[in-house]
Length: 260
Image (cartoon, rainbow, N blue to C red; front, side, top):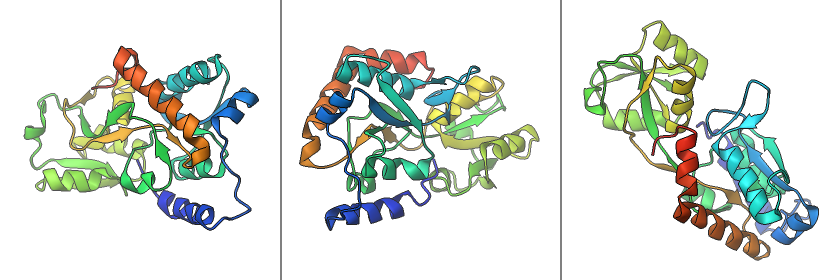
């Protein structure tokens, strides 16, 4: 997941909030969301199986299902949700400015982001993993001196270098370019987010996802900070915890084929 300029722009907005910028649109508290009757959620549309468009163009995936379930929990109607696809660099800004009420868009919970927004309990533990066509590679301890494709600027670069100093990293500008490297046998493995690699294997079943990952990246629902959002905070904490305790969340993760 490329983080790009997210923190720079997000910190600038946070500074405006801190110093009382009058031009900033304030995010919407739960009571106003309920009066509006629509929950506005930032999502992904290109990350199978979290958030993607099916053959009819309809948004599908685990995170899309979570957005609909939250609409049912908070508003009593699964369809009372506006799904707003956004690129990575716009996710935090959208919730900080009030363009959306929530972000459920492959957003990892970390200390830098926690200074800007609140998070629910995490709904999926993502992390860096590997896909390969080479059926002789079945575990991480068989990764030694191969060529490994990574997306340029991705978190996978540091993780792979730390755990596998003997490999040769090959930079790719896109997932398609990474696929080309593997298809042309110019590299043996591709390292990236488990959630993305799951979708890769679903689309290209000749590849396998190795059953382990290097780092943990908890994905959680982001929403605004501030006392006015306390009721929303409590509702999200309670709801996601109930999903976890009831087994509903585990069942939906399994349904979408994500490793746990």
